[in-house]
Amino acid sequence: MAKFEGVKWAPRQMRYLLPDKQFDILESDSKVFAVSRSVFYASCLCFEGIRFFCKKSPAGALEVHFLNWHKNLERLRRGISFNLSKTQADLVPSVEELESILIHQYFRDPAIRAFLENMADQGLQGYLRPFTVDEEQSMGVTFPGQPAVRAIFCSYDNYLGEPFTGVVIPHLVRAVGLNGTGWLKLGINYMISLKALEAAKEVDPLAAAALFLDDQTHRPLADRHITEWDSSCCLFGLRDGTVIKIPESELILPSVTIQGMVTILREMGVKVEERHVTYGELVRWVQAKELVVAASIGTAGIMNRCQRLVCVDEKNAVAATHIVDTEHPLYRQLAEAKATYWNIYKEKAKLPAGMNLFKYSL
Image 1 (cartoon, helix red, strand yellow):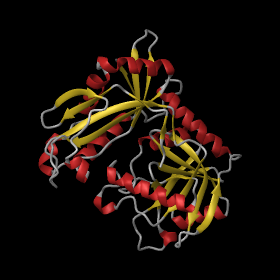
Image 2 (cartoon, helix red, strand yellow; image 1 turned 60 degrees about the vertical axis):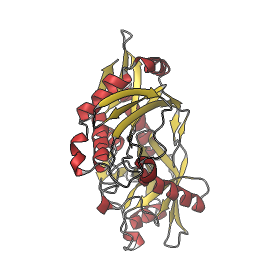
Image 3 (cartoon, helix red, strand yellow; image 1 turned 180 degrees about the horizontal axis):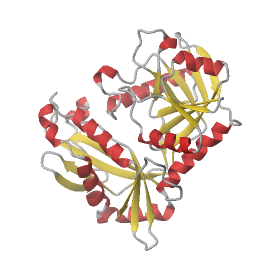
Image 4 (cartoon, one colour; image 1 turned 60 degrees about the horizontal axis):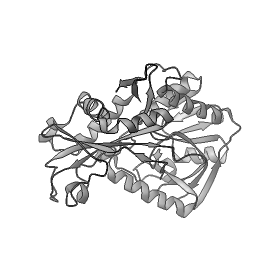
């Protein structure tokens, strides 16, 4: 599973108690109760990852920029709602409420201004991590008594990176569609991701990512659908110049980044199709050298191209191995789309239709 490199944490985190709508600034290493439902049962434990950029305006004012981040906040709301009972539905904050506490209270706190100014001076990437916990000291198997949103952010240098090796893992299922957990950022999904990466390393010790199939384990392996990487969505680039995006479903985390990347690719003139891909089809692409590149798309890394993708059979033996074609135009076009995506944050690239850049003066 991908890792962050060069992380530096902000000096404070925030807490927002949902029942009382109480906002607090805490130390960056502030803890939660060791005896809590969040720790013992992962109750009230969801999170979000949001990329941002700091800059100084021509007048010297500090600004933070977010791209399409209301979609991140809406996804966070869905995660919060999943962790609460129906009688607690009125506790779920609106997108506007989340925006207000994160920007107008947390990001404007004087204790973190120097950190943000340093990020702006160095042009560093920022990653905001809101998450939920139950602030009540209890280990009962019930809905949370004191649900809260906490948040902290960091600057970082890199995430996953290139080149990387991926392995298809058909015998583990990241989420079950019937439960409605696959489209949420929940802790249990990522534990399965870690298990999958462990299994991937048994096939190839250099594996840095695992590619999941759907939850239809009763079907023949070749008929099952590709879903997503262990911690990101995927795009497939084919020799005819087409890029395939897997449709969103209850098994796939709706990626804000992939929506933006697809928009940019289309504006570049790249043909993008959104459709299901069976595992049998992927294997045939690899065997016929029709697959040019498989890419990992996610918030932190934006896009990274897979150097080597290993496909396995029913017995977990290697069935086919894909090696990226660095000479094909799609390989370069994906890198250009990634650079454009990040440059939009910096206001160095045109904002494509349908995308929104949120700018806040601090």
